[in-house]
Length: 382
Image 1: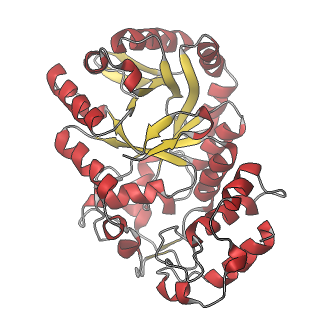
Image 2: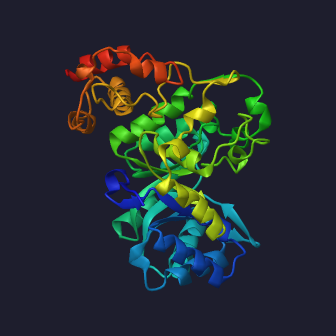
């Protein structure tokens, strides 16, 4: 298992993490068996968004005696009414559901308290100008949550949340399909077939700017919807007309700036195993570019996708990392210190490019890499 630091929280989380919604309607024994299997394979990070009391209690039983082995991301503003989950912005209902959550999970704190599902700008203002954010900050001050998070599918609203400086962790929907879509507060549009009826070109700039902002400011991203609700795993349902594997979906998400972990929704050992295959996968098995390149309807021409096909560089430069650090620095008048340091410790730098162009012949997206290295060398000074 690979472990990554979740932004400025300092928490070391497993890159493959566990979303628990698939354990709904499973017995306590089945949930424990899945947690046993996940833990034995190095998974230490879990997300629990559902307010279902039976599910929470079953997870609590599975955590009994090993709470400190797991980093728990629980959600604020989810309640259980009339036998179903609902999102709320009612402060009293939010507080009551949070107290019940701690009791059901048999813990006295959450590592991350995730403000649940903020996609619309008016909802953002209701949360951040009202009692919900004050409640979250109060919980943090009391040690009942260690870090404040927020979940969203809208890159514009997510950016607004990050810019408040109050959010330490962002849970966001990332996959190569959704990354083509413009910002909006209708989450259904992300997987609606009509959204992919016309040609799409390159990653939506709001999404790319969000990931880079999180990287620069130390807001850790954990990913939801990595399989696009399963559509990306099916040649029939994928907007690309070609299936990706779980390994390739996970690899794509983990190569975006700011991303520390992927919350994979699993219902049993087999689905957890399919996600864990990423850990031991070869470069060829992780290669998402081979599926995405060469499409007529969807193209990423001229856009570095950090896929690594440009390697090996004859001068030893990690081209994908140089491009990533350049993109992180380009949006600011001054290079952020963390970006400058990450660039500095690279074994080889952009100024060492000899202009041979071998990398460009291998790039599936037609990036002018020699020119990109020249820009990076000018920006960083070497």
